[in-house]
Length: 176
Image (cartoon, rainbow, N blue to C red; front, side, top):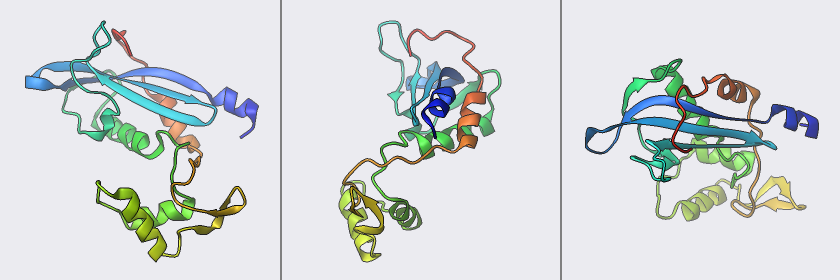
């Protein structure tokens, strides 16, 4: 992507997905901020933002837990939420990938479930597969070792088009 293409494709938007159940069944508006600039995608969310900067529910990487949707904002439904979460999961911080393409493919096919020693187990799995280091991917002239640098994966245009097409928020959040 050329510099001009990157500038032209940059965008930033706030969306309201709907209302979610948070603590003690309390409903809160769920807002997300989507930013794509210089080839980097960042998505964050907040459940019930307050004027003082706090929130009724979670904030930041709220995609890591299920959302108990009470209502959907205009233009949203269960399928759109599922697609949004899938794009978020796949492409958020696309410029901070620990593995080469072959390493990522191997770990996707052979998931590491140990959360306490993910890195160690991932390296062991890659080594057993002959991918640590990955001789097919050179970084600074050397075969790439998993986790030795942040690599960038280009976000596909269909994912960016989907994010651009999401309805802008219909309510101004207290802060996002």
